[in-house]
Length: 216
Image 1 (tube, one colour):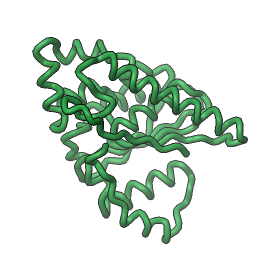
Image 2 (cartoon, rainbow, N blue to C red):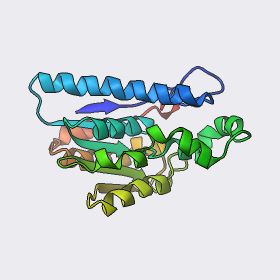
Image 3 (cartoon, helix red, strand yellow):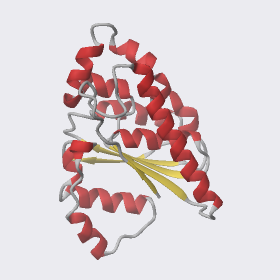
Image 4 (spheres, rainbow, N blue to C red):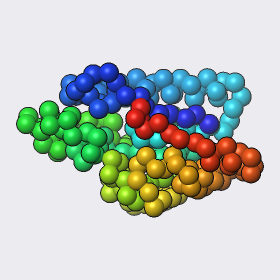
């Protein structure tokens, strides 16, 4: 299993390292993350690992989804509170307001979706619906950063292609998915999806987990 997360950049105008008002830089950053992830997947496969899963949170989940769409050696993908459309994340997330304020005077949401179509999961349905790829989405019903409606569009498109993913909807927001008891619920469901049965000790360890969303 490979996990992905993102870290906050130092640029005062960028909410996250992956996102920047220089739109091409954003595409190149995510593309590089996907290429690096594919290299890891291929290396693991060369070492004899035949069942490889990718798991990601927030934009790390988008990266995991893009890797799964492009790399046939991936068997399962788990996207946790992850934007299917990075453009929609910038447009609607509370934490992205300063970046939106820089972009909106020169382009609309539809323009941004077009500019970032390469990193939009909705544009990678062919790879995401390939045989032998199973997907799971973990959503926060009260998420005001990665709003569930954007993920629901991807889920509905997958269903229309007869590839129904497993969906876990938690009664929490974005950051609280990493706080007890939601982290326990998510860990239990995700591990079951990955066919790894957690011990009570492992679940207890997760109880103390605090995901640092200030760096997500």
